[in-house]
Image 1 (cartoon, rainbow over the protein chains, first blue to last red):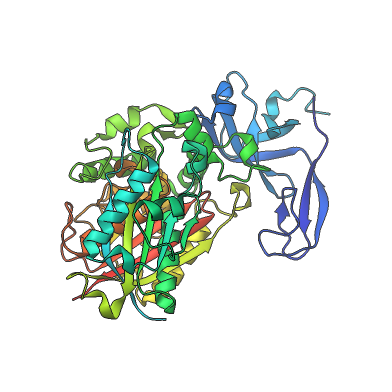
Image 2: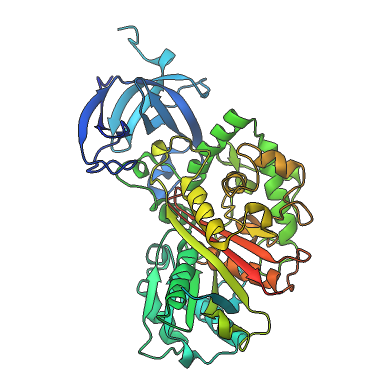
Length: 117
Length: 387
């Protein structure tokens, strides 16, 4: 299952991107935020694998959380799917795979089914 | 604004205080501070207490009047809790400072307290993670070790910082904790032990993380011009700055710098009219080893990216260029989150009185750096002993 786009907010004053819901830009205080969409692809900016988690996440350990730099500029904090044999690195291309109560999930690009479409 | 001084400090040991409640911890530290100041509690005109997650961990809220009553403060004294995650103690100090500096009060008691070890690790991790924005980053399952792991990975990528640099912070702070009777961990650890400890949030290992702890610390503040009549060695507060940083990691242009620290340090140095090079001893927020490295750069002790190398060169040791965390820091002394900011003040006051177990020789100016959440809040406090 692949997601088409990622919805963000863009500040017309300082050009920063915001993850909704937001009424005001956290960078400059600007109040003109317009919805923009981003391609569901990016690269890993930083990442960690979490082994000790709060109770509501403890059945999921170990799990990856990453900062993903989206194509076109904007960063999000997201989950990265665990793929056997995969090893994350900074700059690794990833693609959005799903969205759920944990937010966005990405998958290493080379493992994405139908990634050439 | 008039000068403000610290005339008394009190603390409990930091660690596992089994069978001792949050209320008892706080009351003990407050009574110690009042006794140290040689002041009657009926003289106190305001009380602030810093606390982060007592509601989640021990089901106790409204703790300010609870503690005020517990130590017998008069009923006309306002008792207020302040919360700013792990920065709560520093914020309590700043509120007391402002009240005395403005002339609104002459004698103010400030405290910080947290009771953590009676709750499970999962419950603590959950409580601490409540400082994330739950609508965005919190729901991903990011933890605080995870947040600092994201920073560590970038720091390594951008500046060549090595896992061993992080490990050496832990080795140094554990070594300092050995002689501090208030520290939770009093055993030295080797770099090999640090590097072999289990992974908590890759690349951070167990010994890269501070331990959850119980504890409380307190201080009594008064105008500088009358401080010497209470304590023979009053410590002057040159500045206390508090700032706000970003509430989520993805919003930080460069997560290897915490803007709240940079801005608080700038304000505090300017107000105290000193530079980072004038600081003789620093207690800084090493909730994780990488945090001490990042903080030491953001506070201006080292250029950005050089903090890890400075540790390797011994510059942060007791006899180094800038001794950092002679108390053992959060890593070894422990991190009862709401108490930590005032625990740092306790350690520095003892240093500036020349009475610390790990005394920095001739220390005149001390700096405390207290950080909350994802660098969302920061206080930097600069203290000076009298000549």
